View: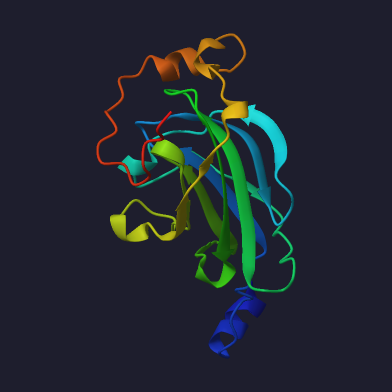
Length: 189
């Protein structure tokens, strides 16, 4: 500890470079989802199927928790991470897929971790946020958003799989607000 104090007094500072990635998943309260595929800087791949916490549109905070892992390699050294996901809306049974390029230098860092919030909303909304640790509206940061594309071959009534997904019954039993004026258009099917 004395060495750290001397370093601070001498004008030196601790290494601020991010050393890890804090990855958070969430969805809008109106549109709970099942995440089936995810990737950063790699081809889209199946993941263990899970239901992310879902009140991102009512935050802060916009997620119920996070997982910390190593920082993805910047494939091509272009300053971007390609983030991709496939998910199914529990309320509509519609599958969506989206890919976005996330500027790494626009990500916030919390405690030397890059903060990456992966948020899914109504009609295929795919939002990447990078929220600061905190509970103020000023702590929220949207980095990039897009409307995903429909993947009808992956549509599935996960809401009926109550024995397969933990917490599904309670999630589906919650009263949800109607989707009003969605950012992404409702598909014509």
